[in-house]
Amino acid sequence: MRGKELAARLRAKTGATVEQLSQRAGKRPGLAVIQVGEDPGSTLYVNNKKKACEEAGIRSYGYHLPDSVSQLELLALIDQLNQDSKVHGILCQLPLPDHIDEFTIICAIKPEKDVDGFHPVNVGLLSLGRDCLLPCTPAGIIAMLKAYEQPIKGQRCVIVGRSNIVGKPIAQLMLREHATVTLAHSRTRDLPAVCREADILIVAIGKPQMITAEHVKPGAVVVDVGINRNEQGKVVGDVDFNSVEPVASALTPVPGGVGLMTVAMLLQNTVDAFCRIEGLTP
Ligand code: GUN
Image (cartoon, rainbow, N blue to C red; front, side, top):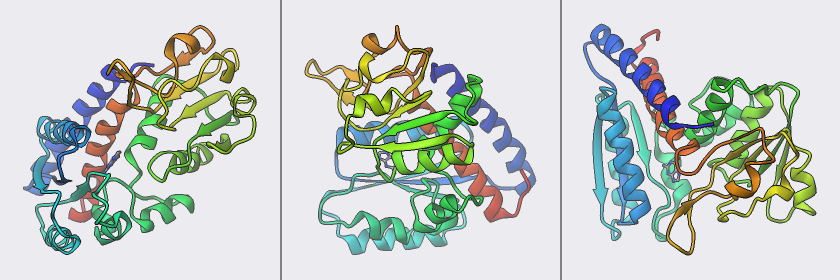
């Protein structure tokens, strides 16, 4: 299951929607992207997000702050963006430096501009099964499974990894799609046996190539959310692609898989936020 063509198609579709909505509203959607510090991974992700926005006709406003910025200064910027009518989405790239409390920052973003879906209000709405801004990577996984016509309803889904960004929200989304969900993690007893129960195995643990053929039931669908560098400096997933490919019926590559869908979903969320804030029906 490749993400490249699918994500490009979705981005083009979002771009067409943006043109139409902007004509009606007399203004364009805007996304503010905040980066703190010089982490090379964050710089790459942030640049990709800004570029994808421009291509889809969404205005992007970049704020690159030094590592030394105080929490109060960052909160002041967020407050300013919350009130700025040109800005419909606010994204603060994680991780943040140790002296800044991520939860405090996430909570400061207005829930209706929280295009990452990380604010407790959006997390709560998601767990209640209500409409909300969805976290981008989990939303991208669902979009990918649907685009490749993989059945979800009634399927056994095992998720490995319990992060707030991927593991927990994808569990909620798979439940909403009527899968039977198991949330496994580093302390799970006999992880390979638990994984082998899965019709759909979603892996987001941040351990390079940890999942091998022994974790996969023949014919299972495997979604690899990991982005790691191996000892040779090559980008690899959490799944050992060469080991798992002969066993799985479908598998997402890294790079070129779920990561590209994340950006496509961010654009979609920004358009959704724009519609809600400007009172437009999509
Ligand atoms: N860091 C890793 N993934 C993400 C993401 O989806 N959003 C933000 N803001 N930071 C991240």
